[in-house]
Image 1 (cartoon, rainbow, N blue to C red):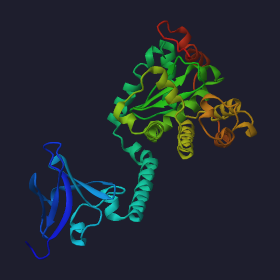
Image 2 (tube, helix red, strand yellow):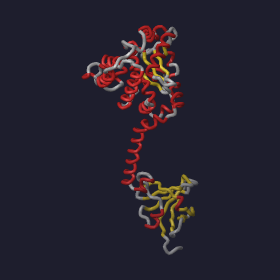
Image 3 (cartoon, one colour):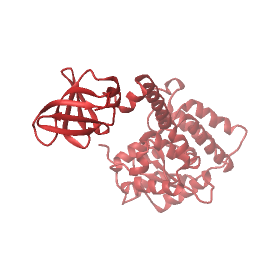
Image 4 (cartoon, helix red, strand yellow):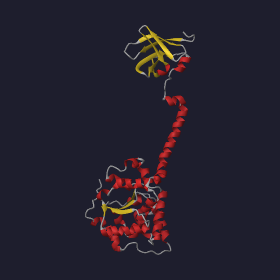
Length: 357
């Protein structure tokens, strides 16, 4: 036996049966323990032992290669052997190895980084989503909006003319009217804009519709839509595509919020296109003022629908009024064309009505 060998009282279950063996554990400074008892003799590699528990002033170890093996040793062990045996895991292996203080600091840093990534991901990921993915996502989300897209020959022609005035690009967005009574308008992934019939009916001039339509087209052109969707729904919107039903999709899109910078960019886009087409921005200003109420009420519960989801109607109205100073304009639509848009949902015999649940 090695001069530095230690003999310890020990009990063990060999994992083959329920017999408890009582004898000695002999360690000579090597890589294993020799267990010797009248009823059992075996050698156990130290590397095969795992911490079990502390029970009645004794330490219990297990074997990774034999799940039912148990070795019971005294609580006080020779320093050399104690250093070779697996230690009690208080918090978890990596925490115990690092120390609680360092582990807490690392966890806090990782948590801050994760939160920062989650909060900023929409801003850098949204504009980088390929247009082809965005179009497929938009088609999956709304399809034909459950049959609620209004269409008449005269109304479609008037909408096309209105769109030409605020989106002169060669490849235009797709624009239409949805038979939904909410006072709202939405930009949908994939370059589609929908004016809800509730908003259309609230409009008193075609210039008001031009201002709203131009604003939503601005969200599309500035690539704001995916950023807002990712902020509201998270990355699941890219993975699952659509909500469970048309109603969920409608309310989700209607409540979708943009940042104030994005809203200002969309307004600037709208005013620029209206200026190029000689469309009066006063209609948009009047629309904001009429639906938004007084300046003091702009943050209150009076604001509903499209205005409620956009900041500062008073500030925005002033910006549109300022854009009209010293300029002359021409009508964007005739009265007949304007009425064709307002009557689209009423005169389309095939359109479905949206019911609020």
